[in-house]
Image 1 (cartoon, rainbow, N blue to C red):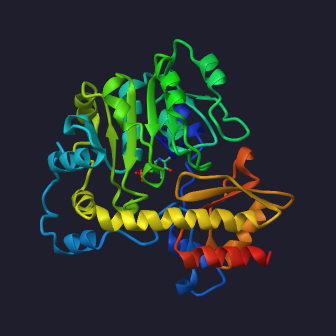
Image 2: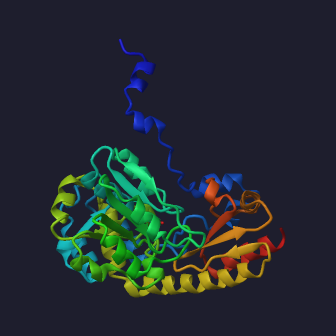
Length: 363
Ligand SMILES: *Cc1c(COP(=O)(O)O)cnc(C)c1O
């Protein structure tokens, strides 16, 4: 008979060794660590939309009757609506349970065991996470001191076993965008180039128009950040049309659940409302940036997204993070060597900015 140890030994070695992804904690868990009443907390750690989703999504979900039915595995209506929004053909769209799902699908489609994926940290943790789970190897090419891509180092790193490169633009957590010329250089290296535009609604210049011109470019988007439905899990890829049938074939058949389906359609039917909240958040990001600049011991980085990365000078960033947490103000701190002296603060409502700035003043 097998004992528990024997069974643990059967786990894939690469996965036994891999580091776990560090997600943001849910609000109630964070509130438990704070020393203020639950109603008085400020959540600025997940780059979420504090104004919530469109009221149309709320209403449609409350009225929805068909939860007993499976969603459309071909995602017909949703792909059409997303295509209209992104200005591309429905044949170039694959929708997923968040763009995280698309990252996973792309890596499972392209990466054979032992093949390599270039990752440019500090960046979003899902690229190395999904690479390892797909059986691939992560090739780290660190960003430069100002968080730009190190193109020379990327070019040097590419070898016969390298298949793909993932670039978040605007980048999380640094907030800066890659230039179109840089992405075009990457496109010439013979790799799949995946540009993750999770924050593009806060920035403006999308690379989506390049997709029909390049056989090896995929742009990822999400409704988690700008549309305020992170909890419903809704993302999509804009992909070369000949690759889409393969992605549709290997995805989980019902990857977009009914609630996400409704959430996508109703959000896209209420663009004007949502764009108002996006504009408010962009304003508030800039107010937050100026607020942080007032402190001699903080160095905020210019951001094209809905958050600000901030270097903490001559003090412990973790200590600032923990002190704010006690006061019920939740920001993001990363336990990695390269980011240990930084904090990331999401753009919130004006009262959220006021609270975080006032709290920092008292530290
Ligand atoms: C938040 C984030 C995502 C997550 O998207 P989901 O659609 O919620 O899975 C993807 N990429 C980056 C860079 C992000 O910061």
